[in-house]
Amino acid sequence: MTVILGLTLILVLLAFLFYKYIRKLNKYLYLIAIILGVISFLQEITIINLGYVGLSFFLIVMFTGVLEKSEIKKRLMGVRAEYAILGTIFVIVHGLKFVVFSIDFYFFWDAPINFYLGIAAFFICAPLFITSFMWLRKKLKGKTWKKLHQLSYLFYLLVALHLILITNQRMWYYIVIFSVYFILKGIMIVQKNHGKTKEIPVKTKPIQT
Image (tube, rainbow, N blue to C red; front, top):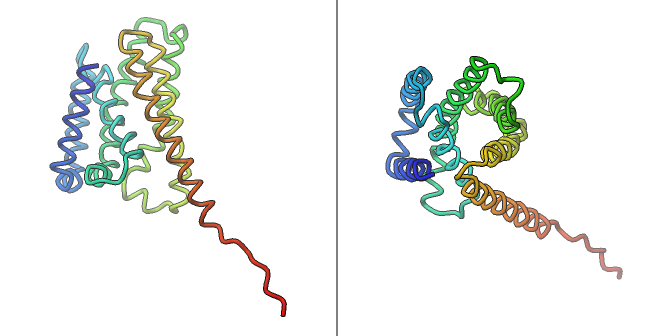
């Protein structure tokens, strides 16, 4: 867990200091991520194929959406799409590594439930990943894009269950992290709906004379 939190803090710091460059050089960063992902896939154990790097990116993507308005939120929002794409690249490496591992050792159809939850999260992540690229996002209607990306909450839930059901020493850390996120998200939704209710104009009858 120390590795994940350390990576997350480093990525937050990089976003805060270099958000303009991350946006400007995003294509080069994607290429570097793919190269690192391929190298990691060919290795036995790394922090990339174990999923730590991908998770660190997605923790930032998740919590950026529930932060209060501030300079840090502004800068993180500026690289949120880039971080989501980079995170997905590393998550794909993690997923493929374990699928190949399961096939090599003949347990694909006899794996624990957290394995299949991870696969489900992978398939839900695919359309979110593709439509995070700006050139494709521009081709979709705003409402269509927003509705599609509501699947991200299901993705986060599946990832949470995937991690928690591994039942290792980090289980309680994952429970706390994802519980905090979903509580904050729930509060945000309630506040947003309450604000909309206040904005509804009250119809008044004309005064009879």
